Amino acid sequence: MAKIFIVDDVEDNIKLLWYNLEDDGHEVMSASSGQECLDKVLAFNPDVILLDMMMPGMSGSETLAQLKKIETIENTPVIMVSANDGDDSVIETLDLGAHDFISKPFIYPVLEARVRSAVRLKQSQDELAAANQTLATIASTDSLTECFNRRHFFELCNVEFSKAKRHLRPLSVIMLDADKFKAINDNYGHAMGDEALKVIAEVCKACIRESDILARLGGEEFAICCPESTCDGATRIAERIRLAVEKRTISLNGKSTQFTLSLGVTEFTGAETQFDQLVNRADRLLYQAKEQGRNCVISGI
Ligand SMILES: Nc1nc2c(ncn2[C@@H]2O[C@H](COP(=O)(O)OP(=O)(O)OP(=O)(O)O)[C@@H](O)[C@H]2O)c(=O)[nH]1
Image (cartoon, rainbow, N blue to C red; front, top):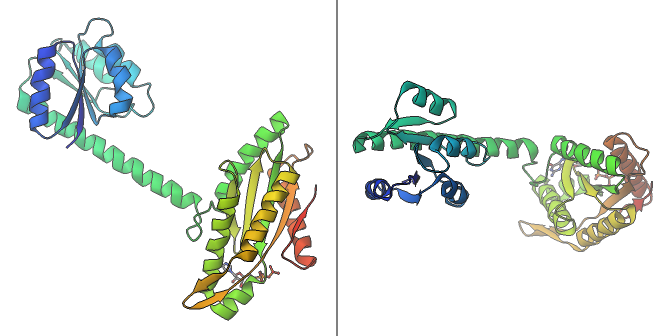
């Protein structure tokens, strides 16, 4: 079953197609003008559009040109239906991006077969788009914690850094690292270590804003970029994360333990030219937190 959108200014033409397509199991929607088609198309999100060429007001060709400008619709197959099936008309329509051209009067089983072909194309496109989306997610995400990975973190943060630099807006970075993490692995097993990493991600996600960027940079080290946050604001977030992890007990296979975090926080001063400089400074502050006994937040610029 597919969603078919019929666009035709003649009510009887719509009815004929509607009943037949519904009998074939499709969900059908119609519009009686190009403008009505443009008004309804996003909400209906059709798999195939059957578009009449000769319509008063906005013609089929003009409607097609407008449909191709709509990002989520531009790849939806359009079948132009027209009594004007001269070569020039067919060429113009296909060059405008139509998937197919059917001459009027049409033989319904032929139209039906062409609709099926267009539906198959749309289904392949949708599957490809979903596969690409999955690949993009895999390429940008750490599979254990479902945070962004290092590469994607720097991609996103470089954009945020450019914005902050151009508009002289605040931007802060928090670096955090689990304390004595090796001991968790050694004493409770690698699976408990993995559990701790998942808890860090979960706690961080709960403590940050949607616009903040959280990533696992590797091992037991995480980073958060906080656009529009000053060092004071980011330090409060860091302290909230530290406290939440300190209070948390992790359990696996009947065993339980607790652990802590060390955190370094810094802010863009306006002088830095690269985002990496902020990460490196937050990392040095994190190292100081380790030196000062762990389970603490050190901030500075
Ligand atoms: N379970 C688990 N462990 C990991 C993973 N990645 C890295 N590790 C472990 O993390 C530990 C990091 O140990 P260290 O770098 O010595 O740091 P630490 O023990 O946390 O000590 P401090 O940072 O000084 O507090 C190592 O034992 C790594 O094997 C992972 O994905 N899962």
